Image (cartoon, rainbow, N blue to C red; front, top):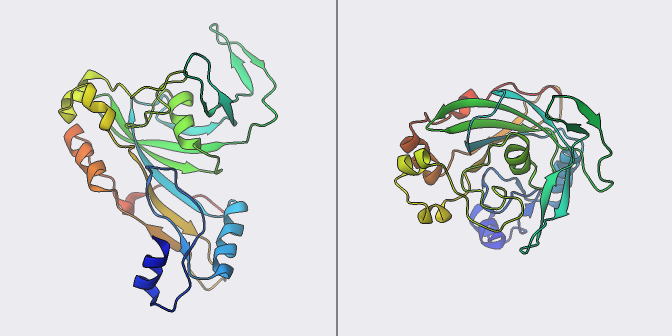
Length: 244
């Protein structure tokens, strides 16, 4: 689509637009495209330096405890057990927590990558919650893994990370299915409710303002919120901007 988009926005003689970063498949929202190689490299450098602030909205099954906080758990790619073996991202925690509440420090995998996500709960209803997410790092599938395995709140429509060892559709609770007017077999058609709402680039000079790019959620996301009785989030209310 990039050549056609370049022609539509910049004219037939324009160079193809360049992707500066990526979104997970089925994730919606803001995506930065650059008109020149120089601009793309500048944005990618800011991303490597963790100077680009991203904000996501996720509609999750369950309500996190606590309602807001920071998840600082490394993530690693592993092969699952069982007959349906496949590779997916998983947590590689630094501590093992026993049933009595005691902890033991464990060595994380050498291939694990540091992953930090800041989150807060915006609203909850019918056993679902709307979260605002600020990823501090940018590891593959970080948000989905942290929510599902770290908070036990998988994203609605995330069929990959709702189970560990099985390749099977997500099974939302009965209350959510009733609110969405879906049967359990129909739940396999649920789309991933993860949306990149905002990306902020720092100012290039003292007299300039940061570049803030925003994107409203798609219609299916808003329709699901409405059926669950969750007020739609506002781009104007995105909270706690991070310090440089």
